[in-house]
Image (cartoon, rainbow, N blue to C red):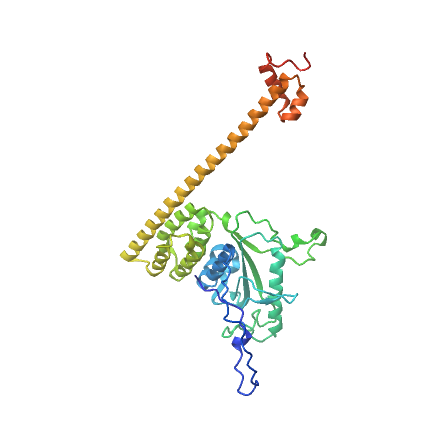
Length: 398
């Protein structure tokens, strides 16, 4: 699994050790609690695994830049100074003094018209619809701007060490950097939350342009078109394609095809891509051979050995697919039998009500009373009375 860069540094870990004599010796307290009991950590929820895997993938610079070029249709993307981009600390202190950590934050420069413009790209990964996502993003953006404002002095470089931001850039003019918020959503149902901030404000139309407003970018993974994803070569396109389905049989088919598509993926993105596959899908592969074959796929990309590994991987997926389809068939058969029993039970109940209605007719009960007792519609009761006219007198008859 791709390691996720931690942005929280413990003050104890970063502080210098105290000099001898600075801290008086503490009295020894006998330990009467016995040996410490190891408590197993709770399992990581599936949606957290997804989020962490996406964060790890987008923490790789080559993957992140390719993601921008492939999925952000904006003019400024063409002017990226790729060497200037660095992933920045993402732990933020919001106005309520609580710490929050956006999923991925990158900072870099654009080169256009002789100026250097600083841009911050903020990416949030979601597995569920967050109704007030625009408000959450505004909190992140405000905290980032506040940190930038506190350290900015017009004419002084404020970029990361070694950035050499020149006079005239937004970093040295005292102006704030542009922040581009993007949401990656891989949930089942369509994204329904407002993308523009002003849509969260009651009566916003009454205030014209006088309100704070912005619109975040959205990538709704399940709604991306398969043919467009397969036309791209980057790791994120492959991940979005794999993550576009939860049907196990379809996942197996896509993994099988991915093996042959790996040769198109840039060299520096293959490892992160397969790390994502291992983290998100690895637990569903056959335990006896899946992880080993995934590891070999990362190491071998060309020649006869690569062909052998790819063939073995495809055979494993074929066996997995066969088992998956058989389980699906057995599940369908079981559900069909259950449905048949339920339908038979319902049909039996209807027939019993009809028999009750006929018996009540024979006793001379009127149709309104029979309908109330049996729950049968009036037209059905009339039909039954007509069919059994010899044994059941007409309504109101002797």
